[in-house]
Length: 159
Image (cartoon, rainbow, N blue to C red; front, side):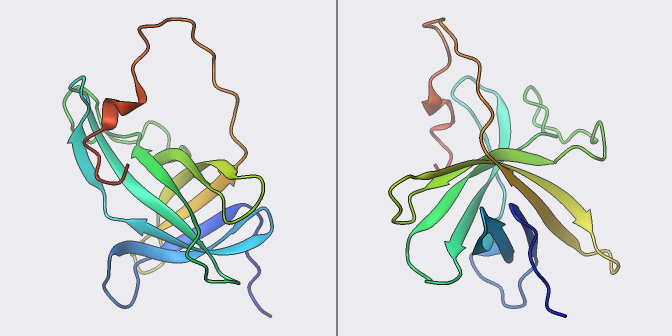
């Protein structure tokens, strides 16, 4: 029996051949098969001095292998923004990394999704990533003109 990827999920493992990506695997976004690639983490500080860790996530169309891709950033929720230390997970069911992905893939309507990533251990104690992809949740609208600009993470090499 062949493995069928569940809709809007992905799994990424350490690749056999070393390369630009720390984890690679297969995924599905709205019924379309993709190859998922996750880069090594980047740790930095925002312009406001808050610590963060991020990873670039890339989805490449598996059927066409076109250069178009869906990509985005995820941020480590366990990083203490004041000290930069990694905190223990509050809840082992909560995702370690969250963020969003987007891209046009040559389609009339661009793809925009939220992504959550859990770090898991396989039976051999090797780390792998389990991802859940969903439509974006509505974000609260702020009327405050002093809201932090999106360029707060301008030093991130993935952005």
